[in-house]
Length: 316
Ligand code: FAD
Image (cartoon, rainbow, N blue to C red):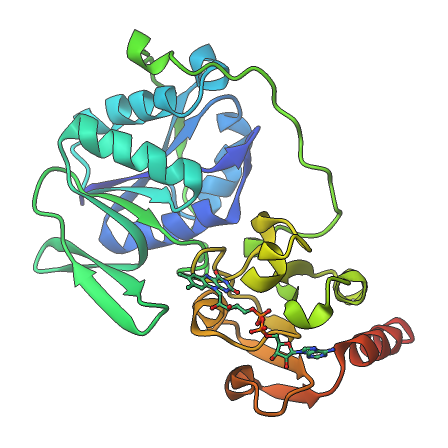
């Protein structure tokens, strides 16, 4: 069976959910080999084994922490090349896409970004991308080298497939060309205590209808243990940071429950949330297009409805 290289997104060995999704997809096309860059491979090993990694390759070079992206691409390319993998899978994050582009260049391979599905047809890896705000699916294959593919978060639900991977250490040479942009300071994000937007089981999102007051959105999110999301109109107005934007030019979420408050349902917003399992809409305009997606729709002022729902949840 062919090897599929999976670059593991992690923080000190705490594996991010998208990495488990990559392992799940990798198993469809071959045997997943997880590559852990930086410290933490031993910590990550049990989780990676739980989701089917057959081997873990650890690269812990000081340059990976000292410099921006380029050393990671150097390391991944050097680890992947001798394996002649059927594919190299990387999460579709900002960093992930830069690593993917650099690795594809180094290996003289083709690159596909933002895949939402993978399969093998007649021995070839076929990717599916969802384009034009989810209205079209594009199926494609790479015709040159080991396919380098970035995969969007929540493309699949992670599935366990217990394995007992050995951790191997690989030595790499990080060239001078990869040591051009040194990291001078890392500031941890202020902890909100809320789950990560792309990983949350529940998302409560606010739009222009909040009028800039995200208080009721955050209060409901907190009683539900949910993440907060925002439409682009809310983000562009400076009411909420861009990191929380849901949609075509923001994040893609696929939670069990998505609450859209004061959001009209523009196609670009829907592209980021329409695969949510249940959708609750609160909007004062009964004609708002987002009601077409709603499992439960409430016509009303979010400033009255959200606090009432929050109080009800609290009272239970
Ligand atoms: P509006 O469309 O202004 O809707 C506000 C809604 O709030 C209305 O339905 C109104 O009835 C309701 N409302 C008002 N007051 C209340 C109240 N008190 N209580 C309840 N309801 C109320 N948008 C995204 O969200 N994400 C993206 O990633 C994204 N990417 C884009 C990329 C491109 C290339 C382009 C061109 C656009 C993109 N957009 C994106 C913008 C998108 O087209 C819409 O402009 C945006 O989603 C609108 O945000 P909204 O629904 O909050 O605002």
